[in-house]
Length: 305
Image 1 (cartoon, helix red, strand yellow):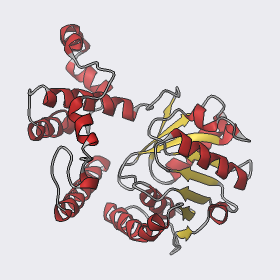
Image 2 (cartoon, rainbow, N blue to C red):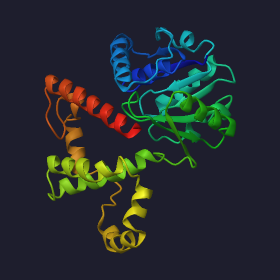
Image 3 (spheres, rainbow, N blue to C red):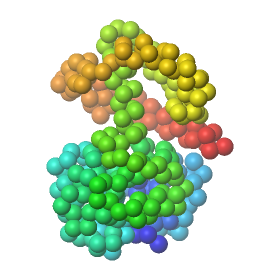
Image 4 (tube, helix red, strand yellow):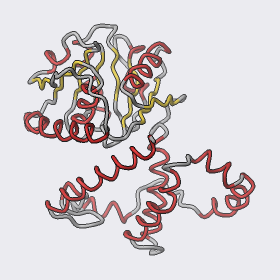
């Protein structure tokens, strides 16, 4: 049995831990903040309930995730570490240095970074060949695709091992062949978000209309037909004809639009602060999370079928 440790119990850690346990691993978890450790059991139970709703096989054998109060005990004898701490290079570098002190050279260290190049994270590691990107999508207990990314010094054997681990969980590994910032999923997502913010900023459409257009237009199609297959379905000649004039007019700004920066400056960060582009009450947040989880479960079941 693979013994795994999840380091970081914020937004994604509990869902990742629940998925690993469900897949038959022995799982320990740690977060340096006591508040996060205290909240983790409820988040893990919620994620486990969603996995049950998805009909995912339970190979846990009745085991539970052990929440540790210190990193060293969490890492004792582990085969896999999944790092999911805040998305700041200095924080991740410090955590990686600590992990390196407490695990054997054969232990694979996977980072759930959303876009920091793996080459930077493996720098200085005593065994850089075992460091690999393991990028889950949020919510990790629902979205089945995981990007596997090799850094400059990651060994091919580590990539193969990680892909086998992901497959063993009943999930879908996708190998990213170049260690580019943002990898693939987030590069495409942020291109979409950049254009979306620009269209709303310029008054072309309001936020509600933009969400409806994307969710029930391209989002509905792309859930079933990926972009490359969609090009073939529409015809490369059509893409070339439209792209020849439309590409010149698409947003290509290198900064972040004032539409977003003004809100972050004012502390309007989204759900976490009760308001961002839209406004939220605690009751509304709970309702939205339940509705979105239910819909994502239904979509995944439909796609699996």
